[in-house]
Length: 72
Image (cartoon, rainbow, N blue to C red):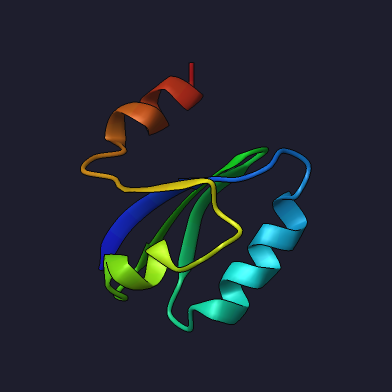
């Protein structure tokens, strides 16, 4: 599975969550905050690129540092 992070319009977290779960069968959402979602899936990056509700999407190489900062 590949880990991605994508940005979207603030205030749309609930819509993004439901739409992402509908569009990608094997998605696992790791973190969802206003304007940002971190998730894992086995689909190719080309499929993520076609999701029109994201502003930007990136492959996340490591999220351990992000998780550490959240606990401080």
